[in-house]
Amino acid sequence: MTIAQPRTRPNSSTREHRALALAEERFEEIAASHRGGLYTVPASGGGSYDGTYTRDSESCSCKDWQFGHTCYHVMACAVVRAKTSICSGCGRRFRHHDLVELHEDNHDNLTYFHGDRLCPACADNAGVFGRAS
Ligand SMILES: [Zn+2]
Ligand SMILES: [Zn+2]
Image (cartoon, rainbow, N blue to C red; front, side):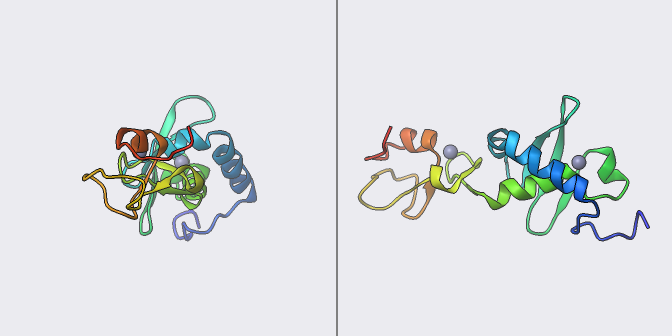
């Protein structure tokens, strides 16, 4: 029963609650750690785990996951992923409303395209105009 269980379905509401609490408390940290589907997820007892959450793969370096459970670290990644988008500059994840979408009137930087979304730091580096600071 431990091995055959589908991983995408949380099998414990306790895990789900811990995931939501973790995602809320450490949201910025988890989002900023994002690189190509990989996240650094803070562990409750200190340290951190390496979580992966993409459209087609999920995994975690913790014991819970090794034993075949969908751990709350992966669930926390899922929560963060759902609420964020990737910055076209640095590849980290930011809340949708923190990203600036580029269009022809707010930048003339040749590195980026119209429609790209940048985090505040990357927008500053790219010289995006008209950002409220
Ligand atoms: Zn885990
Ligand atoms: Zn950025």
